[in-house]
Image 1: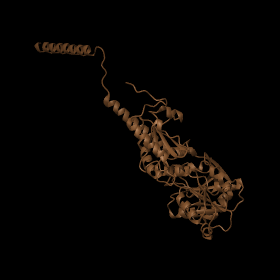
Image 2: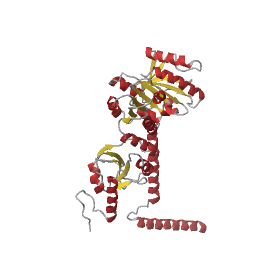
Image 3: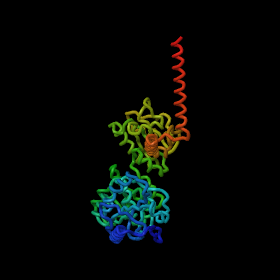
Image 4: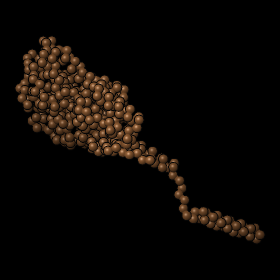
Length: 438
């Protein structure tokens, strides 16, 4: 007997589903509405319409098993549920409840959405557990945090962690940086400090207010901006300090740099862990501080050989080598400053920059993938391996399960072949017998 469907397109709730419904309903009414060790499974009729909660929902199909994502969500769920402002991770079987998937325009699986105050937003951030937690904490935080004491400033900086730059406006009104805070929310933390002591001034190295401090905890770098606090000047300071003075070039930093329009002064060394390279990076920081219209970066051949080779760096190339890269398909070398010697490297870097600004350059094309090609290269290789592996498994199962097809008249042909071979054998025996008699 077929079950009658509800008006929403879902089957009537079973006894177990009614229990789950009640559990989720209670969870949604509570500010701590998810336990720290579970991912809530929503049914079509229990999907939350609340305007108060923050929920991250994964729409998934029953036929599609994505183990890696499920494991990452399991790891992230207890951390997110234990935050001061808890975030629930939930999942919906969109294969079963197509009406719900259609309502939110879900056309691929798995799809992740964030519901803030009942408003859905697509989530395109990382899905690895630790990065997922960082990204979601940043996503649901207020645009600008208001800090009213020394301890509040310290707690904010500590809670922000080391993954994003931090901006603290001392003596600034919240409205001054609110627009920029909204624009760069995914890339930095923003706050204003209303009340603070002289100790804070000494700690963050500013001597007057208003002042905007930018912090890079992971690189032990900070900068102070005293104004003017007009839109263009203020945004230039924020944009220039989204990165450390000298950026280590890797997969993650390339993704961040794609939105920056500045040219990249790229220094290629043999090994970034080498002591000589570390000394050179310190010298580059001084040059970067005086040339904020450029992005300074470095990469090691041992760390990313494929990337270095696109700038014609091979075994016989003299390193360190400096180029100016547009972040896409073109780069320039400065005539007479193709490489840097160990002696007086600061002066050599200054001559390189002077030659670039004077136009004494040779323009070249990168010999490998474009900017976005580097970003997708690792993903493409992994995907290729997966496709090849899946194809091999399918072929293997087809081979071991393949049966010889039956055709009409097979048995007759076999009998005919047997009789013909028998008659040929008899004629051969008679022939040999005749030869023997002769």
